[in-house]
Image 1: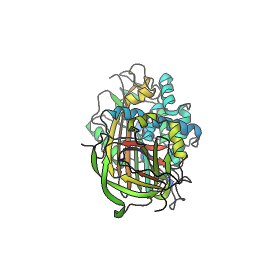
Image 2: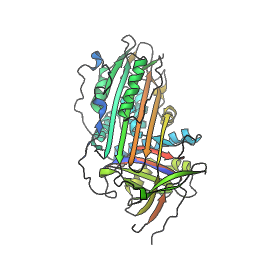
Image 3: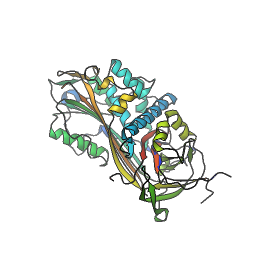
Image 4: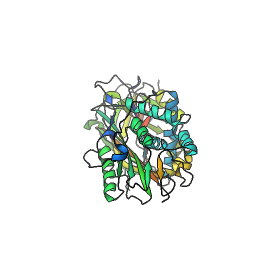
Length: 447
């Protein structure tokens, strides 16, 4: 007889929803035909009157490019990048004890676009962190193929948009056409050339608001005089549960936050059929409509500190945990929650090994272009996310901006209630890669 796990005050680490095509452990084949993920970067600016540069964008269209289907090399590099970035981001937020949520995919896409303008040691460092043993050409091909394969349906909508914004000063900066063409080819990135004034600030933030379905209103507060370019990725995820919770499934309860304080909570109860266990935590997966994506949660075992657990994670270990999920019954409970999160990624990326790109004197972005005012370098990488989980489903959004400057009832086998801090993910069921990965420490983040 399998051992039952008693009710715990859940401080679960919720593993960010991994976007994948359904695995055998997850569920049946989708009822609704899936179209590729919506790539909105090729829009004409939506409802916003954003002028394109006639000189640099005239005649620019995405060309057919080689693809590399996601394989072991690619998945290993992406799991490693996502988990290590999550760990470093958690360290940044540990003192404040706030909820965490990052999108490794969003950060990856923004930095991969930027890396197409790098050379020398700057490029080698970025390749090592972003792709491991993959060079930028291979990474472009893998990411292009991966994005094209991500499904989007009425029940599980997922969209990706990429854009490049550069200062309209002919005597200040010149952008290499090959750089723009490469990012158009692989990331469908649109380039906008405009004066960097208050109107530009409004247009950039309006683009962000539009391409995150209003979940993230803005990414930049002001445009510094030394800023010459923004490279921005936006993601939007909006999915219904495969089985929507009814009022009978929702009960008033308590959540024990990271400080051990009790908070009022609404827990959503269900029986799930995919069980996760990595030895230090146990969890479950709950599918979204059409079975392309799942919510995956991991609750550290009693006596295991949330931050210690996150620090122990590895890309290989997480990939193995998700791949070896067992078809066992789980009595589960997820709290309703919503929060946003923002972080400057400079420190985390530097710790992972990207250093020269942030050095205003040593950075080599000669493949991007040149500035008459001095060397081009990355001043900041800003990342903002939002998530809302309720009885109907999940909405999540992410934006990453790379700022470039010049010198200027069944038998229940397990009972897992997320009523204390936990790690969660949004994953795609085909590759198990986390598009979002976060940790809930507090259900009242404003307190």
